[in-house]
Image (cartoon, rainbow, N blue to C red; front, side, top):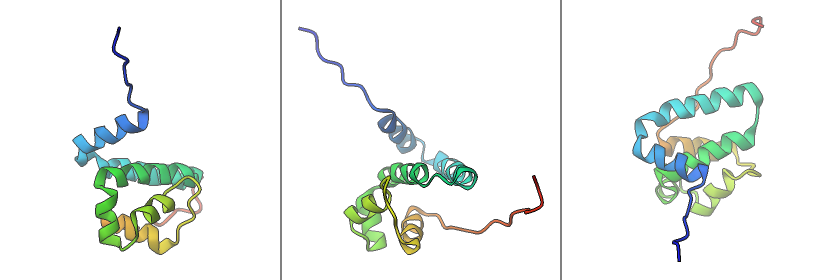
Amino acid sequence: MAKERVYKTLDESEEEYYRNHPDEIDGYLTTAFEEYAKDGCTAALFAQLRMIARVKGVSTLAQETGITRNGIQKALSENGNPKFESINAILNAMGYRLTPQKLDVHAK
């Protein structure tokens, strides 16, 4: 009898890639926030942050933020509605910070 093949999901493949190429996380997160600035899709941004949180280690982030593992997972879920302080704490624990960028309101 043939052995049943187990395939990775796209999320699992992406997570493995960033575990093996942590130097590329900066660009990935920059792009994630740029896309969020364009389309305002919070669910997509949270999915990207959730994947990077898994790469960085949710348990480690929980220790550094004082937010439980479950709290981090809930905050970054598709239906998450985290406080600003939670997102800021999670990003800081990942090694990032939120910074404002001036917009040219007259550009089209």
